[in-house]
Amino acid sequence: MTSSATFRPYEVFNTNESRSESSFCSTLIPNHFNSDFLRQENSAKRVGHDYLTDSDEETSSEDENKKFVTKPSSMKFTRIIKSPEELKKQQEAYNKWLLKVKEREKELKRISQEKQQALMEASRKLELEKKIQSEEKVKEWLEIKRMEAENKKLQQKKNKEKAQAKIKPKEYKIAINYNDWINRKNEEFIAIKTMKEKKEKVMKDYETTRKSISASKFQTWLRSSSSKSKPVASVLGSDASSIASIAESLELVTL
Image (tube, rainbow, N blue to C red; front, top):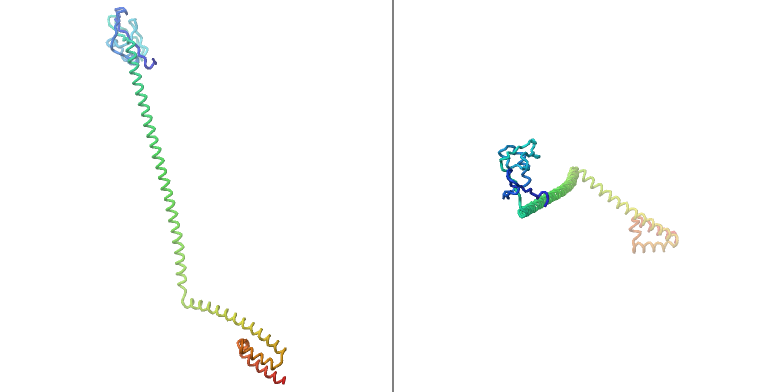
């Protein structure tokens, strides 16, 4: 047996009788009760509960005052003695009680672990919810900033249109007419340049032909070219008649 499960037997005897006349007592007093009894009982009336030796005087080692307790020799003192069967039953009962205590401790530990795990799970869920809410807030903030930027661009466009609408109609008309005039002048310049190039080419052909053929043949060429492709009449304009008259005069001179 272990020390925690051991109980000290007490013998029932009479101080005036021999030890052979001792008898068993059914009262069971564990050893861990003795120290409390020894600390409290210092009087002769309650001395029967104290643990005594064979002598009439006993010193209590557990007594805080460490006083000697004197026992009258005429009084009967008891010491409980347990049989092995009783000790075995007591030990079995104690073992069962200890097993229940250990099981209860395990149960309490399991409950504590479950509570701790539930608390950690709840804390984790709370942190996750906070994180999700934070991400949603960030998304909302970004969406708000994007809409603000779009509104700003739209407002700038509207302001620009308003500024353009404030231009006076006369000035706006003058600007439009000026642009049209510039475009028209460019087109006229291009046409004049093209016409000049064509005129130079016709005059060059004219000089070449005049020098190479006679006046009658030149006049015939001039009239035929004017009636077919009309390069002279369309390009030279009034110069065509003068060229014809020159050709006639040349023909007269030649003749």
